[in-house]
Length: 153
Image (cartoon, rainbow, N blue to C red; front, side, top):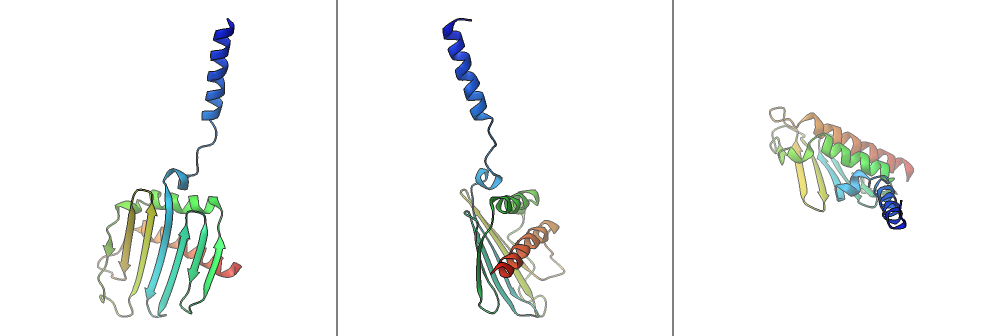
């Protein structure tokens, strides 16, 4: 093998190793910016607000106007973004149910933003127009984060 061919071979070898490093996290790949969970109303008179930004900064404001903050790890952000895509959140309707359809109605809204778009899904408790199961899967993950943030503060 000539010196010139060896040099080309080594360059290609180095390039192949540099391209094979671990891919960016799913939240980085999707351009994740933030996710918000709002829960308002219901028998308990909820007024909860959860905001998670792209750096993992979490702010949770509960019904009592108490504010809790925490930073969550990249793995948790990836879990949230994976849940958004695995449950087809982006294909959901913007609204399920109708305001006032049920006494003591609970309204739950999830707002997801990335570099490309923002998607909001609002759900009013209404047995005639229930959201897909995937919506509740996402809400459950976000509610668990709310509990974790509140416990750690």
